Length: 592
Image 1 (cartoon, rainbow, N blue to C red):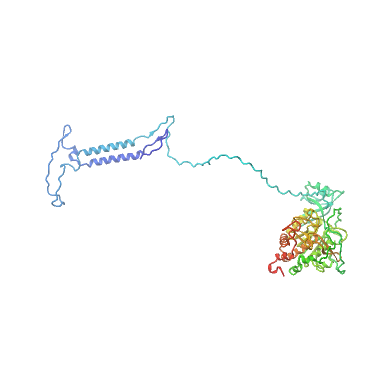
Image 2 (cartoon, rainbow, N blue to C red):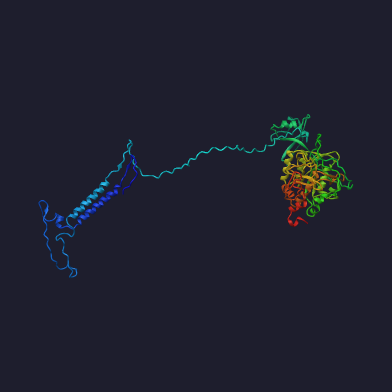
């Protein structure tokens, strides 16, 4: 079988396969010999090429004889004639030329085949002086990666401005240096925390300070040293020096907070002169030196005056649906801590409600009117109707002042001590009806109170519509409350801001005062006290609620005022105690 391949210059191209052709030649030759011996010739021709041969190889023509037919051979039927042989004396078959023709044909064919079998491969010479390369068996081509078709390079796009990773919020410095305009602080005192390996005596000597007290505040998780500066140096200058001291872990001023109260006006006579004395308040471990408070700019007070028009003595009862609420809940066994100026628990409205008292200041100062009014707004149960008359009062005195000596003030250190005491006494509600500057230590304590399940309610502040946010009302860990009047109008002296959560009655509210007296009060402080009472009612029925849960219930059930939805004036709106309790309870027990 001839295999044709494309010729290449300088390569050997095989034209045939030799081995099969040799076998074919032998086969044809054998067939020729077999045919030669099978031809019909006479014995004489086969052996000696006929009769005697005369010189010249001329053969005598044999005489032809006709042999008559004889009897038939055995086995042939009688009467069937037998054809006589065509050439008597010969083998049946052809004449003498047959063998010669067959032999010649076989020889020619075999020669051709052998010639083809013995032919060498054809070599196609290259005109160049290159050696012939033997063609090897073809191997499968290697797998090659096909490059994508080249595309026309487009014009490079304009690179966008590089995206920079968002910078984390700047860390608050460990030392707080107040601005020169900040006057709400004790000028000759500082509060600082030592580094782990630092010694208090060395730090005090370095800054010429005297330690007043050292206390661990559990809610804040920190040990604070309160120190007085010597030589008339200011807290601002010493804190600036402490900023680079590695021995000081943190430091800040001892900030001042105000209850914002004027001398009461329009007070009523005592309800009764027969009043049982109050139990003694718990004292701190050591009597502290009184605080020297600098002259402060005027602070809008909590108003305590007679109403300008005739009102129902207690319109708050109707606004908050207290009659209906008290058929379901009265705040039984819920401890409400009033961090304030103390409370006159001898007042008829507060008899039998005290669960404990604490005096962070140390001293025999008479309770201020502000604390008494806040406590009565929550728990009154005589002529007045408190929001949660079944609750228990924890009266903590952290503000100094008397009923007639002007506004009471408290410091960071004393407020933190009062909060820690309230947490240790099992308080669930914290009423914070005071306002002041932003304070890192106070914020840490409020975060700790929230983590322990306490709900802090704070006054939004009486700074006015254009005032900066006041604290702790603006702290995220409290519920900030603003004040409204009997017509749901906002209190003109209240702060505004997005931090305000809710509004409550707080204008021309009849409140209790020390020595069994009563007076009308206005401001965000007493509005916050009303919300603290509502929180006590909710916790009585749903003790598992936390600060965020309570804020959500009060906001979702509030009566929307002002702009639609939450706004900086009213927050979510005026509280609706009945609706809030209905949301907190199953439908079957929501209303009487």
